[in-house]
Image (tube, rainbow, N blue to C red; front, side, top):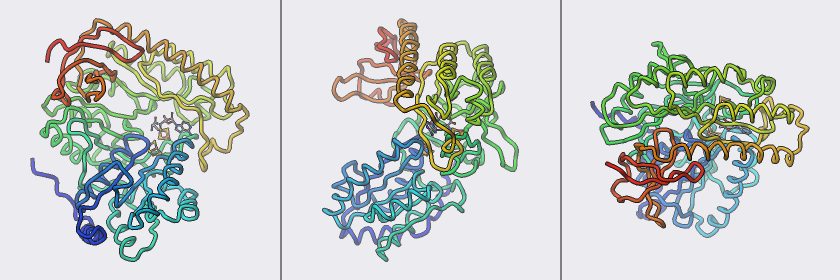
Length: 465
Ligand code: SAH
Ligand code: SF4
Ligand code: F3S
């Protein structure tokens, strides 16, 4: 297969030249700090891909940087607060290094009130751009460097996904492949449809080309990304659904795992589960957020399924894949949720027996429907419910871990702890196993036997390579 044609990104060379001028010929250094979900991580890899082309090297140390970009997340208030905190700290760095360029991008920048706040309260920020304007980065840098003016660019009119941009992959064995961007679901609490725009799917040929090249380059894990990944295919000229896409990728030969996230229950079908069950490369695990176990709350959330439909999906998937692992997201304290309704969430958690849960206390997001709903329960009360939920899940996770002692599992070795020297490997079901081994196993598959479980963390020993 030929290399994909990289597109000509306008202003790339000029931005490189101006940057080199600014650093008097020294290699310019960038710090790209990414917050939020894997979509943002994948965007961060595109940003770094462009910076690579401009001749940058990378650092984690703000004091070393000539360019700092904060790639932000807007999903909860806490995420935004962290960014504003970190941004405030950069003021002094800029005072010490006046030549430093500072940019804010990602989901927060797509919100008008955030752009306004940066305009007024953070005058040392040079560039602000949204999730659909990444390919305009060189152009924005040229304006900031050449004309010394601040650049605000939301890029909302732009095409959602630009093919052919260079990618700087953070890992040499695990890769993110976005298959769609945006979200059309408008769950009433969620900011994502506002900051990421409408759903847009990539052409299957582009996705297959990426996957083929990754496998040929020795990548061992490919994760397909989309906010509602299983509604992939809508709006493409030639009809294709997500299951079909999975089957076409799975047909590629090689020793790799094919994962995907995040699936919306309303688009999870029997075809999807049977595709998983019959695939050669897809692990039997799925992230399937349920958010709440109560029908009234689910309706108010605009999730478009009810408790029974969700449970039916779980039973269907288990009937086809008895060894399947489920993980999920759940929100505690949605506006108007009562303690009795919250108990339905707990009972659903017990009934499904999730391997892992990502748990959040509801956070109002300006501009969403839920932000206007009455929210009488205090934060302190919600925090108590949250603690109750964690306890339930911890007990389930501990049982799950115990039940795996003695099992022999294939893991992908992800890293080595520099302190203990232990390797950590990821099982097909997404759990972490720690075991002694050699540094050069990182990035390879190996077989381990679980000897002990501490909660969800499995202690293991290698049994064969
Ligand atoms: N598209 C994915 C994930 C979106 S954001 C999905 O539909 O599942 C990840 C998680 O953050 C959501 O699943 C939800 O549990 C949580 N979340 C989103 N908005 C939130 C809010 N306003 N307050 C608290 N949690 C929220
Ligand atoms: Fe947000 Fe719902 Fe879209 Fe997920 S599906 S990104 S929770 S609106
Ligand atoms: Fe956050 Fe944007 Fe992802 S809001 S969760 S980084 S899509």
